[in-house]
Length: 542
Image 1 (spheres, rainbow, N blue to C red):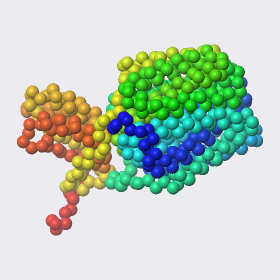
Image 2: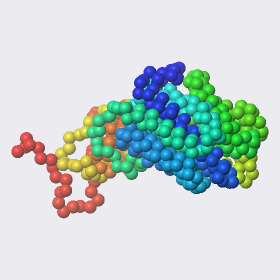
Image 3: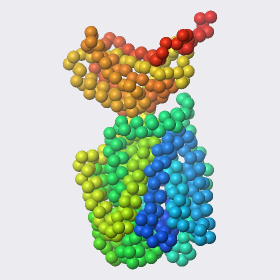
Image 4: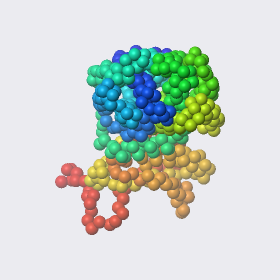
């Protein structure tokens, strides 16, 4: 993938351009609503903890429900999922506006409505992020992810200031009403989009199995685990700035709702600068260098923000923080997308968002507690120290480079002709492969089989084992189980070109005159009184 590709290249694709533009309106409304909720909480509650919980109520649903939403994104029509989420958020925002207008909002009601809007976001995000690979080709994927971040932060530079002005002049009810209207453009754009639907040769994976498969894929992918861990740390520490910004505006710089909007706008402006510089920065530095620098710069911004008592200086500190925010999160996102095959990309992105937003939700609560006890300035200072630790952790858990692996489906597998009359749910199935390995090749064989084991388990195999014949030590047998025949077929359909490189190395070490012998067997834990898997009836035999 050429790193020098233009960040604006995805705009060549009409559908992406249409959905991206409609998303701007939705993001604008969401940011206006966020300002209204954050500032309204300072009016109806005297607790700093409750103010920080507004941010937590937005991010907590993403942490809780993203994995389920990712499984839905990989199993169902993504456009319909996004439409459902947008309509749900529009209805909730309308009800919130009515409550605010009639004076019926309490702090807990406000948190409940904010939580429900966060649930809609949790449902929408995995499908939207996973759709990037359907809207643009692979070489434009980093640009598409960056443009998504830039679009959000473009609205962040305008929306908070607009929201602050609306709240100051007309109250939070109007901010909530504008958010309800803002969903219409995206609903219309999604209705007009007619995505190409890939044919499904296998029955849809069960919901619970789909979630397990996504978790298993991440657990057996060391590079993805590093991304998840680092994104959690960044979200945990960096959210302090956004969660405590209402308190910075009110207590540190002695401003009002409009000042809060200006501060958020500066954070958004910095994010736009970061998005525009993103492609150029990736050309010059490695991913880990960028992420480590972002941790350190954000830490410095948070500490200086804790000492600032002037609006202009606080605005200045928020510019690099915003740039680091978008560079880091977009880099995490692209790394996940380029390191994951299409069959599981929705779940992988959902787990990434669970990690990142889980850190944000936890951080919002933690920094709110510290601010309530010791002041916003102390909370910001401590978060800066945590960010410094996050940068140092990169020395041990470095972020991987963008994968150059070919993760397209291999499509070498052809379902064998069976003599038994199996059904898709027949099982469990045991598979064995016999290899003939010379003594001098055992070390490279075992290294390759260690990778083979990880790939097998990652793609759904169970009880994997490697056995050596005691009487013929040159014979090695790989064995594994799958629950049903359809899961055996699904296991092989998940294999990618990158996975084939490992098996090709193993085949090169095989010394037998024939290819490794494969045996597929249905397992019985008890002995039935009659044969419950009869031979197939072939018409030519009658």
